[in-house]
Image 1 (tube, one colour):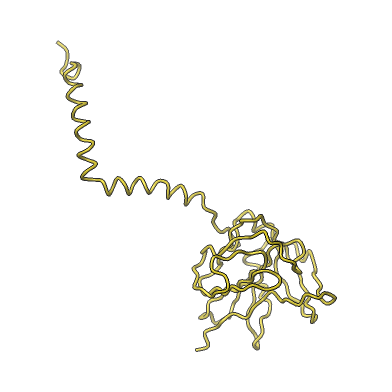
Image 2 (tube, helix red, strand yellow; image 1 turned 120 degrees about the vertical axis):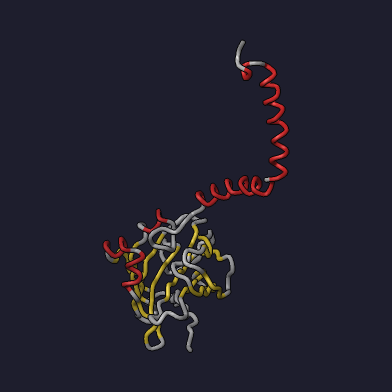
Length: 219
């Protein structure tokens, strides 16, 4: 005689128990099951979602493409920033936690991001063909938070063929001045290659500085 589990009656009973247990378990553990089902696609989505690279503002594949650019304003004032040519739809992230002021100018949208409580007065500026999720507002942002993406309007601007210009500044005597150390931390490769382009606006009709004075905690 064979073992009981080798008999057909064993498998009939086994299948019946399985069929009965499925709805019972579903009834008692429905929240956990639904939560687990929703967890899987959310994890997949998070893995596929763009994330900021080492430069904190753009995806990693664009960080090394930034080039150091010197711009001379119509008044003869020199400033340095990095220019980047990126694909439309490229996500833009906040490099720090603080406040982001977003406005539109004749040379595209401009965001100035600063921490009002930072004693150094560090300001990161992002200018260009940008689509902000909350334009013409000032919002609190977290480090790494997605604040917008690169658009397709092709604003006429003194950026040349770059569709983004990024700068880091501090405030001195009521004016924003370059902070090359902070910018170099974000884009070290650009500084290794040195200035690759000078954009001179002294003979141009464009006077947009591309940098807006952010709000500061004056307490």
